[in-house]
Each structure stands twice: as C-alpha cells, then as structure tokens.
Image 1: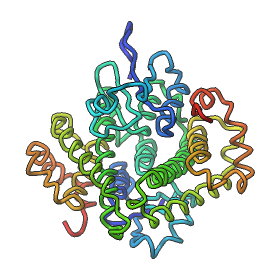
Image 2: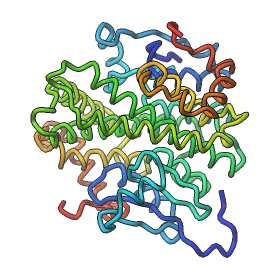
Image 3: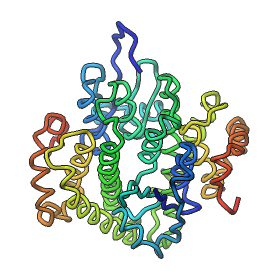
Length: 201
Length: 211
C-alpha cells in the first residue's frame, strides 16, 4: 500500500498515525505529494478528491477520508486503533468527533487566510474562530477522558491541537486551557505522534 | 454497545430535513434497524435549536446523536460507525475485500457531499464575501466525483447497502445544490442506478420534502 500525504496536513497526520498504530509501517510506503498543485495528476490518478491523505491499495485504487482510512486500518489490524470495550469505544468516538470538528474549523480558517483578501469571508472566519474556541473548552472539560489514552480518538484530538498551535497560534489555547496543555505534553511523546510531527516543530 | 434491558428512554437524533449529512445518519438509523430505539428530532421545528445544539456539543452542527446516558456524538461518519456497532454490524461487512469497496464508495460520496456543501455555503454568502477561486476548485472536484462514480457502476449496480446509500444521498444533494452540474445528463449509468435506488425504503423515507 501507499499513503499519499503532505507533511503539514493534519488530515494526513491522522492517516499516518493510523498506519503506524495498526503496525503497517512496513507494508505501507508514505509518499509526500506536496505541494499538491505540483502532483495533482498523480493524486487524481488514484482518487477524484485530489486531496491528501489518499491510501492507495495494492490494486491501485484509492481510499480517501482520514476517518475511513482509520477504520480500514483498524479493521485489517484486528482492532488496534479503537477500543473493543463498548463504553471505551463510545468515549473514543465522542473524542474523535470533537477533534474532527476542531480540525475542520481550523482548516477552514487556514483556507480563508490563504485566499486573496478580496475573496475572504469575514462571516465564515468569525463563525469558525468561535467554533474552535468552543472545541478547546469542550476538550478541557473532557481531559479525564483523554488521560492515558492513545486510541484514535485521543490521537485525533492531539493532531487537531497541534494543528491549532500552528494555524490558530493566535488562539493561544494552551494558555487558557492548562489541563489540556498538560495532557498534550504527555501525548506528544507517544511514538506515532512524535514520528508524525511537523518538521518545523 | 447494547442498551440495558428495559431501557425506555429513546436515543435522539437531531437532524434537519435538507441536510445531506443528517440524511446519512438518518439512513444509518433505518438500515441499522434502530428506528424504534432512536427518535428523530427535526431541529427546524425547535425555537431554541441553536442553544440546544451548542449545549450538546462544541460543533453546534447536525446531525447530533444524544444517547440515553447523556453522551453526545457528532459527525455523521462517527455516528454511522457507532450505529453499526450497536446493531452488531448491520451497516458494514466484515470481510476485508468487501469493506475496501464499501469504504471506497463511501469516501467518494463523502468528498462529493463536502464539495457540494462548500459550494452551497459559498453561494449563500454575501457576494462581497464569495470566493471564485474556492468555487471553481469545488466545481471541478464535484465533476470528478461524478465521473469516478460512473466508472464504479460495477460496484453500485444492484446494491442497496449502506455505503451505496450514502453515495445516493450525495447525488440527491447534487440534484438540489449542484443543479447546474446536470450530472444525470452526462452520467447516464449513474442516473439509471440512482433512479433504481431512490425508492429504497430508507432513501424514500429521508427524501427532502421539496424533492
């Protein structure tokens, strides 16, 4: 298998973490397709989304959407990414969803920031800043669910927060969310998370 | 995740009738056979919907699933996987080869839905705030998704499994929010498949009221 990624994409990071957590590092080659504009044809040959991550299966077909890639890696690894226990699985899903909302919110803001000013939408921007902050608040209140966890829910949250350090630096989420900051420092040492850190970290 | 025996309170699925993401979760509820265990709540009928949604989760978005124990799940893809679990696997197969095909279809449906949703949001913005760059990019992406789905008809023909239904939910959304694409005219195979799947009970039961 091949995993098309860009080194700074938080969605790519979730898929890269999924491959590592599943124990498939040796069976899956990571290919940096950034900048996407330069490698679009290669991406489009595998998938109409033209987005990273795309997992190229052995038959050459592509699977996109990091959440589906995570479930696929979980399924083929006999359940290494999501807890088997029903209550723990539910908590994991709850966290993964909030992490996903935060990532989408930050990504929308980042996309807006990179548009020509004449094409930017203050309305969208304002809405998403508020949404990002609500996510930090919600996660701060859920730290006890995150503590000591390295399942896909916790790692998705961590990927989103790390992305927020970069693309939402002005939020200064660490200053105002001390428990979340402390938790983040512990998961930053986790192997799949450390191995996928942005190179400018 | 079985509900305790004798559980009487229903789970609640907060939705809106026009949202394709809601539709995916509503289809999952029906396909998982959980109609009687989950009550659908149309937030458009609630006066305090914004406050209620924000009380349940930081996204403030639909669909949102509220469980009996107060746990809240957002993100339709997460909700679908949860409903698959509690229905002992009614939405997804267990063998890897079938799962690959299902996830591939579902992912393309999801990309198409996101693309159309972005376009829909752009077109509803004040003209001063619209981005022709974003819009052009997404129109191109939607078009590629139709083409890929047409080329994957072999996996869709005769199928009414959950992943096929999510593709149909995206195409139905395209009929509405991407009407300019006229995807049916240029993709006759996909159009024929869509016409076949539209009467499927979980599709028909979740159709937009204006469609």
